[in-house]
Length: 142
Image (cartoon, rainbow, N blue to C red):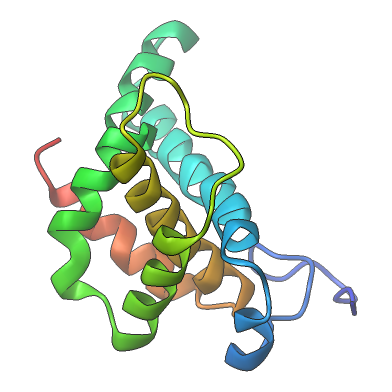
């Protein structure tokens, strides 16, 4: 991987082509997508109001729990492009190594698909699209 000579944007690495990004396993896209999405949620929360970390964590669960991500996906699905919907399906249909005990497997798989979309957009350098989807999420009543 080529590292950029200077940090420009939110990634140190050159964006991958769609074909290269599709070579990643869906759970790998979900892995990075989870980090990107949670970072955005945390950043939003700290800019909203200065609060103790335990309250910030509680508020973040409205956005980052598997149940929340599954619900967000249901409401966001009509806004996804055909490519994004395909990445979601690949993520949802992947075989997770484990499923948390407090979450239904269908909900967990939808959350994995949701995270895979954010990972795909991140890997391909579509930062403006990530921002656009995140702003739609913030407009939702969660």
